[in-house]
Length: 506
Image 1: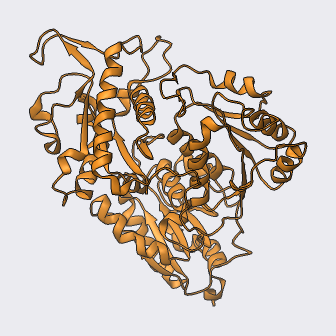
Image 2: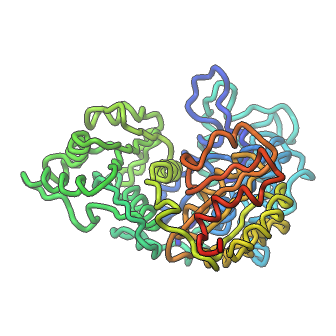
Image 3: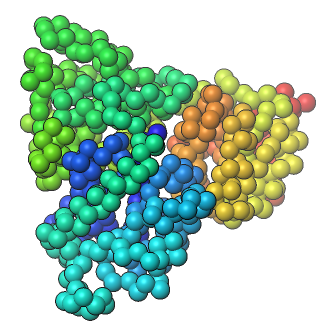
C-alpha cells in the first residue's frame, strides 16, 4: 500500500484569476509543487489525492471519496472562508476523523494550509492548537493585520510560496519516516496489482525513457488493478535492433489504444532507435487513440535540482513525434492523469451483453440503489420487483456515509445485478453511482454485475427523455422511463422485468 495524502479544499479556492493568463489555480499549484518537492526528496511512494471532478450540486458524497479517505494516512486541508462554508469539506474532515479516531496521533495526521487569516476559534476541532502553513505574510507578527498573499490576483506565486511548500514537504517526510511501515521501499519492478479478474480489454503502455520509469510503474499497476491487460509486459524490453519496430507493432496489434509517458529524454541513452519516438510513430500508423501524459510540472528523479514548471504538453508531444488530431494530451500531475485515463477508458468501454443474451433468472439477487430523496419511489418498486421473482436488497442511505458504505459492501459483493431507482435525484447522481459501481473489482467482486438497469420515475424531466432502451446512460445496460405515468409503474415494469427474469412471468 502506498502512502496517500487526501487533499481537501473548496472548489472556489482553485479558480484561476480572471484575465491573469495563469495555468494553475492555488490548489493545483500547491499540489504540483508539493509533489515535485517530495519527489526531489525521494520520499517513498507518496500520492497527493484530490477529487479531480468535484461534486456537483445535488450529487451524493460518493463512495469514491470515502474510499480515498480510507486509504489516506494524512489529510491536507486548505482552510479558507469558502471551505468552512462547504458541506463537502466538512464531510471529508468528519470521515477522516472517523477513520483515524482511535489513533492518539490524529491531530498530527491533519495538515492545515491557510491562504488568509482565519480566526483560531473557527478552525476544526481536530486542527486546534496548530500554527498551520501560511501562504500569506502580515506587516507585523500579529495575525489579522494587513496581509500580502503569496498567490495573488495575477495567478503568480511569490518566492515565499515555494519556501512554505518546502516546509510542508519536510513535515511529510518526517511523518512518512514515522509511519514508514505503510510505505513500501522503491523497487525497480512494477508493483503487484490487486488481484482482479481480467476485464477483457488490452492497453498498450509505451515503455518510457528513464526519467518516466516511476510514472510508468504507477500507470501499469493502476491499469492492472482494474483488470486491464497491459502489453508489452514490463519485463519484455524493446530489442535494441532492427526488430524494435516489429516488436512494438506486435503488441500494438493486440491493444485498443496506446499510452505514452513523455519526460525530457527520448530513450536514446539506453536503446537505439530512441524508444519514445519509435512507439509514438508506430502507434500513429494505427486507427486508434493515443493518450499522452506530458506533465506541465516535471521533476527529474535523476537530477533532483532540475524542475521544469512551465512545459507546454502539446510542444512536448511534438518534440518527440508528429501530432494527431485524435490524440488526448494531458498535462496535469500523475494522479490527475490516472483519474482522467480511467474516466476515458470507462466511457470507451464496449457495451456488455444485452439483456436478451444474458437474462437474470428468477431468484436472482438484485441491489436496489437510490438517492435519499427517492426513498418513496424505491419503496414503490419493492412489490413489483419481488413479484417478478427478484430477491431485492435496498441500499442503506440514512446513516453517515462511512456506515452506509460498510452496510452496502456485502450486498454489492453478492448481487447478480443492480437497479437504480431515479426520480427526484439529479442525473449527476445516476452518473456518479453508475461510474462507481463500474469499478466492480474494488467492491471485492470476482466478476462484473450480470446486469445494471435504471428505472426513471416521476417527475418528468428533460434529462430523463435523453435516454431510451436502445441508448442508456454510460455504465447502464438497460433504461426504462416510467416518469410520465406514475399510475402505471407496475405495468410499465413488465418489459424490463420480462428481460431480467423471464422465468418468473408465469
